[in-house]
Structure formats: C-alpha cells, structure tokens
Image (cartoon, rainbow, N blue to C red; front, side):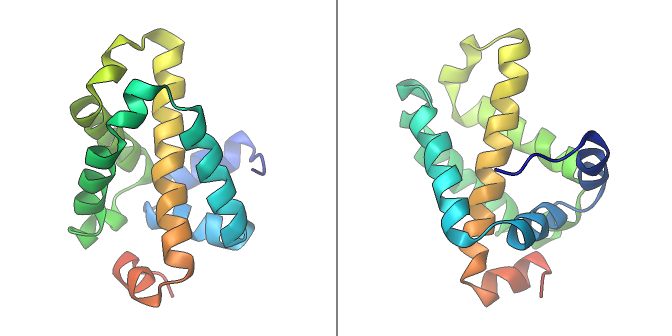
Length: 132
C-alpha cells in the first residue's frame, strides 16, 4: 500500500469517514485493495481471525445500516471501529501498549479496505456512502 505523509493522514482523519473510501478508490485498483485486505487477514492471529465474522457483521450494521455514520470524522470512525473490536474480538484484550495501537490501526485499515473494495463494484453501496 502506498504510504501517506502525516499531514495527509491527519487531513483524512478530520474529514468524513467516506473520504477514506474515496482515497482508496482513487489510489488503489480493486485487485490491490483485495490483495492488501488478504494480507491483513492472513496476518491476524487465529483467535482474532476466529471472531472476524461477528466483527465484520457488526461493522456492516454500523456503517451500511446507519448511513449517517459515513459523515462522522475519520478519527471518530476509528474510535467506533476500535470499540467494536473490543466488543466483538475478545481475544484482542491481551494486546497491550503500542501493540494495541497498531492492532487498532490494522483493524481500521481492514474495515476501510473492505468497504473500499466492495464499493468499487457497487454503485448502490457508493450511493449509501455518499460517494459518486
């Protein structure tokens, strides 16, 4: 995945969460998104991976079921995704300190890449997100 500088990251975190989806749609091909997503999932420890179905179902309800959530700033979306991970991935409770921050970042990337890859081929989903 292409690295972004700190200023670009901070800018996106202050924009509505949909801006992250737009960023990935503009900078990555769907096959690249899927490859990145596959690499993230493959690197998850088994106990985390085992809870992924419930976590992603909840993420779908959080964003697709409540389209207004695409309007919240990226930083708030990251906090919601982290809280969702705490609730739906109990195996993450043992992750501490800097590793916990990295875990939350990874989970944020995974959710964002998932929605980006899904929306690349779905005008209906892009409409729900408020993207053209």
